[in-house]
Length: 108
Image (cartoon, rainbow, N blue to C red; front, side, top):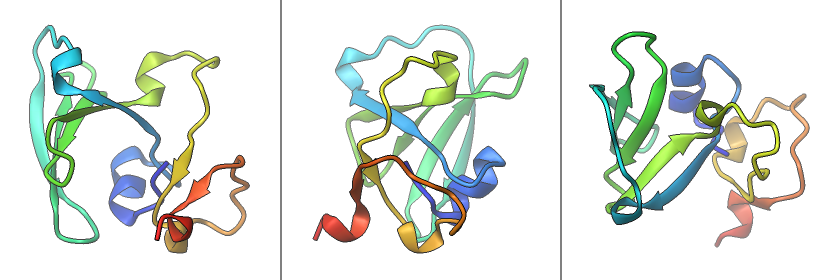
């Protein structure tokens, strides 16, 4: 779960939630357009979105080479496991109640 401003703008929500897998365990099919976004710390992520509906279907972040991230909402599965890690908590909207998870300040 990411509360950075870039994720807030990208999702149109108050945070972004993604699941990540090693790239060699992911099969990508179909067409996707690419958009590169620079995050709060100056690193780039390449987002792939459906050219028909515009939904983000997966992305790669230069600070996590070899991983593919998929927005959890793309699964349209309310039983998907909850997030276990939250980052950029200083940008979290104070009224948003988070599930029990590891906060970025706990990662140090």
